[in-house]
Length: 246
Image (cartoon, rainbow, N blue to C red; front, side, top):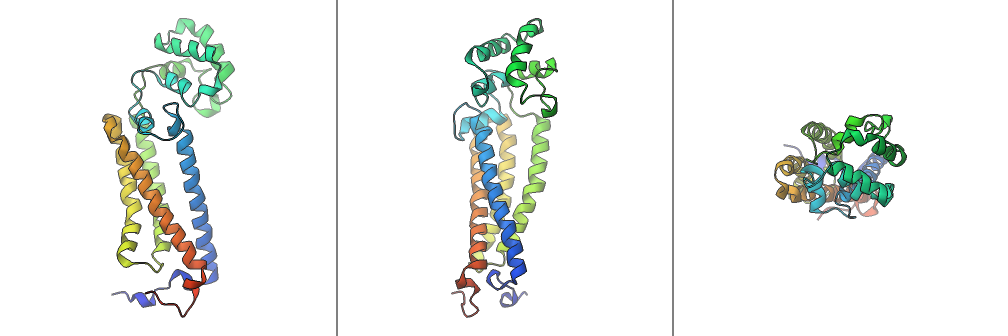
């Protein structure tokens, strides 16, 4: 059995470890905020309105099956990148099932308004590759199985390591034992729930709420662990040798 009295707490750590752990937690904290901002600027604009909603999640994973990805982009997050008359022509082309005999008119519009971002280096070259533009003009079925598989394994492998080290540091905090275990386990549980919700939403849009719950759950637990760890490393109350946890 481990004698908890012999475990070094955050407030008693040598200074090099405090600096190391603090740097890591601060960078992870900023990273979480950037991740939130990125979600708001991508998925959060899927329905053309600011802020993350259930409809945004549905459009991202299940798709907007009343129209194409091209139309969804031109009426949503890419709306400001082209004049109204250009967007109307592109949307009408998509609704007409993207006939290639009109490419002489559509190609220059894409080159003038979209090529700055969607060039050869972007991996989504709408101008040089007609088939890419034609595919985007098809009915939007949301994320592909290949795309979901790729993003799922990246998130599971990468984010789990972040939670491992955040939990490792937090494990040295002076905290209620039961709640400490819950907080350490929570990010992993909600990460699995988050990834699972993508696949469920792909088939059943009613599960979109799980995506929002999953992301909120592991973000909240991580935030509590990060702030608690930083406070206990640097505030005098925990660094004082004579202070004992009640």
